[in-house]
Image 1 (cartoon, rainbow, N blue to C red):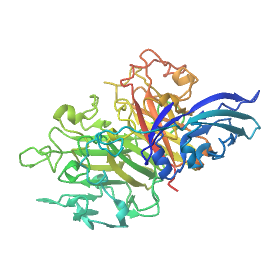
Image 2: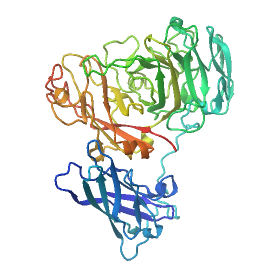
Image 3: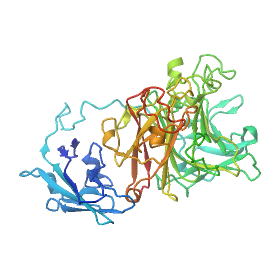
Image 4: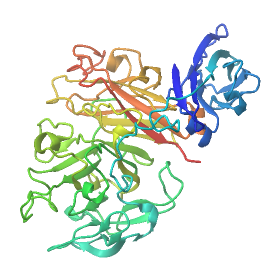
Length: 561
């Protein structure tokens, strides 16, 4: 594929990565070598960032149960080197960027398995130099005259910055043992990002406190010793039960305000993602027997939206600080296992609208009904372990932020049948799990199954390069019994009466040990009348065609070191 890159010196580097002459030793079960780095290779980032000299080639070969090591049998006269464990190729001599006489550099990658099998692949790298166009700025900057409009989100989408706190101390907030209804928590004073708090006749508006309904007794604190894998500094929020609690449902109001987040500069009308890392403890493990009842809901995020109505907000449903007109209370449901960090990515398509059982719920539902955008009008939310558990529970939240997919590598994504997406890694069992909801059906049951394909990469995955990313080997709800094919990157909903989708899989150890971030993408490949498995009830076909041609993407930080 051809990749266009602008360097800081105003030189555009065209890199063509072509794998040729793939061959394996006779009788070997070692796969051929693939290049699993499919990003548009921005050499500026590579040369200046934490992967100095990375050129967008990561070799990957696989043999069941065997460790693979990589080397270069031809390094183009010392211009390149390869990491033996990860297969990632780097440039070692920067004068190779200016090859006036021979712009093509050829390298040969060799993969060796513990079994003794070998495989090689040749890559031709075009390092020809070109001058980028001047778009009117006169200084050779390729972005001159073509910058996207600035988005007026002043805080970079960060709502609660727990990096500026410890225990009950939190910058701009005051801890009280009775914030509301005898529940402990924080009250907003004067905050450098959020501004000042507001007062209402019933008390202070902006606050974060225990959601003490049904007798739930919880407290919260900021920890600096248990952080998401995406950061090595600052703090995270811990929500945990008090000693005399018997309900075992840790729950907390994260934000309870008299203004929507857009009026605090956290979100705007283009915001369509809420991202955070979550680790829950004390949950009963989810069943993983591969049956119809394996998946359920044990954690949820409740959201409330509001907007100004022009009238006095004298009661619920009248507008800020209460929920907006027409019952603007929604739920995002998750079904997760305890004991590991998962990355949660909520979109504008909630799982449920309060009191609206059985009715279809549109993506960005308030835009359709009231002309309001979901995250722009968000003013209250809580996170809760949904049902009582057998032991005391707690959870940790970190890296909570909002953003727009219009600012990402792939702005066109499936928010219809792949919603409330999460992915996590359990190092103690070396297992990955991924889950989401399919809300694309008007009603469930009656054999309305759907089928999905999941792939991974060490670089951002887009609609264009999805087919080039590496398929996962799904261990649950995959294979002929469920999807009618041996393709283990395809999975099916466990139960046609539920929107839940879930599977478990593993990735090569060398990837987990050497790389910082892994990208995942899911595509709905449902075909009405197709994908029937061989076992009941999955021997029935998909209930409809995929409602979206696009992928849904999420990433996971393994470490930041």
